[in-house]
Length: 285
Ligand SMILES: [Zn+2]
Image (cartoon, rainbow, N blue to C red; front, side, top):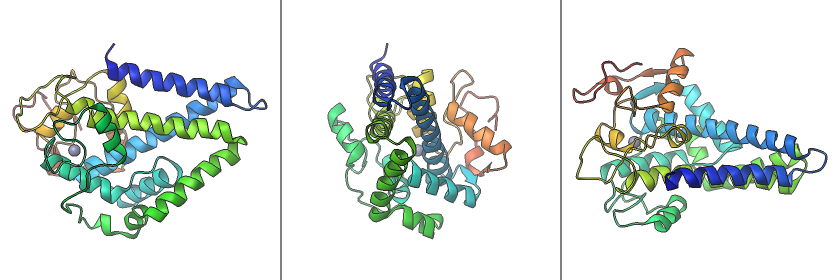
């Protein structure tokens, strides 16, 4: 088993054990496990829609056009109730990451950065040296509010307190709250470390300018909403899907198609340009 998969499953196993162990007696271990699973799945899915679909393909790359009310609702819901990720900073860092992939100027990771250094950088990235996030929607009240430090501190205290109030036990709430964030850190490491280190995954395109790799197993693809298909994505960053072959499983694209059927998103012109060397007969959107 690949090391990144093993670590991911271990985190889930520890999370499940902690939920069962710390569940108060009036809830019991089985119901504790069920509550923990519900919390985990709901906030993983919300964070995936927010980061991988809305912020990444919708705003950072402009491959998709989400309805503005949906963009704002998802941004507020995720950052108030779930795992906080400052939207304006994230978009800027991500654009710099594409511009300077794996070299000076990339806030996520430099070529020589190893596992522990990248883990540290997931929490405290390199300073951004340019501002590439001047989009109109990023200047809106919702985005300016969600990007403030005060908002971050207040919402994280609020959503932990709310969870504590709902389940009625501080240790049980802390097990879920902290466990969820450790899993989020693993998701971040799949994107920033394991798919940007040449020893892991595979390459479709032999790009010399970066270390982007594709990791295609079911578990990391599902967990990251397909953001681990980095070699495909860095080669054609504007394409609205990250899988470049029908044989590549693409969970993120499934969620985008589901949102399209609900009328929440449409493709932009540049998102639908299918380059000739991408082995897809059609975009499938
Ligand atoms: Zn990208």
